[in-house]
Image (tube, rainbow, N blue to C red):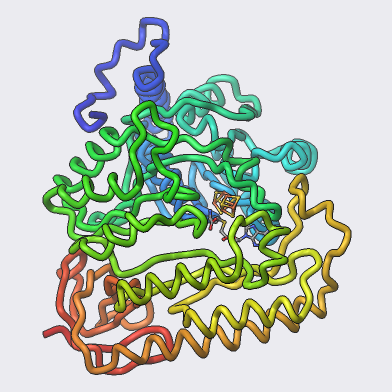
Length: 481
Ligand code: SAH
Ligand code: SF4
Ligand code: F3S
């Protein structure tokens, strides 16, 4: 385990090892030496900051980057006025890209004040050749660029940059490697995400993820279970199993195993009190999974089941491989089998060729399923995806009209679902001090609903019972009993 390694005792006089984990430990040792000298010269510690854009998978990758930076001797800070700043980027919709470009200008200002500052970019956006070209041309002050497939090389790449002083760019097209046991620093002491698989094979026609994250690869169940056991021993009570399509987990392993079987094994691990997972593709959700969820005392009463559209015609063009009726049948069956479950979803408005009647179909599904929450997105054209080449792109005003209509129904059903909990008692995992009022604590129910109640920071990471008193739209105010 990386926790048992003394990075100052690695023999750095030898050539770097070929085995990947040992190799990265070696470079962590090298960076430690480098930083020690620089820190003495400057009479201050060296700092690093990691900023995440995008999804839970990126958030988990950022914890790995943070773990490596910390092992390498950097002091981790929130502020981006640091000696190393990493942006872990997302490219799922264009606005994610624009935010990165906007902030790079700000970073350049910091860099002018601190000659030792290094700016690194990684993540999904970097897998796009046009992005790399643009950065090389217009943002040449960036020091290090790497992608999603070689994130495990971070220590080696950072050391190369520190030694050479030149911009380092290393992007791989794909990988079949899964490198285990690199350092990782969790954002929360009591909960953690765990990758169970990487990449995606679904190629929904609007989506860039398969192009920037590569083909689907599952981790070995034993690696996953060992990681969770270690987390549990370290005080983690809630875990979130991560993958773009967890329902197809394990199918391509040498000894295939289903996602439901994996959940059964995770359930047995002592210390773990709550199990979550993201994301489920409706086409692969099995009856076995519904039964495992139903019987489980640890799997949370929450299922994120992206709909994308309620129109069978649009779903076909999206290559989602289910119809409106199949989605409805599945969602309503789950509601019947597990009545207290919260079902949330993702919806895209403005996919090429979508008409107001298609939006009506989507609204009809929202009304029938009564989603507990829905993330609604305006379609964003992603270069290289099949949908980007479709001719019937929808005019902005029509998209906006459909989006607003959908949003009001989504809010209406979400409010209705939330109100059901009024006057009940719920188990809440306390997560943090309330952002706006320090006398309140914020926690989550099993169904992912936020609850605020009077308390103090000593409750963080504990499961407490709260009387749910007042529903304020999408969250509750309550009192701990
Ligand atoms: N693997 C997950 C989704 C990952 S992306 C799944 O299949 O559900 C998260 C969400 O972003 C998607 O569910 C989709 O609603 C949205 N999204 C993806 N590509 C998009 C695009 N080009 N424009 C708008 N929204 C998009
Ligand atoms: Fe994208 Fe579809 Fe894969 Fe989800 S399942 S990541 S939406 S291609
Ligand atoms: Fe974005 Fe990459 Fe996740 S594109 S949504 S960060 S997989």
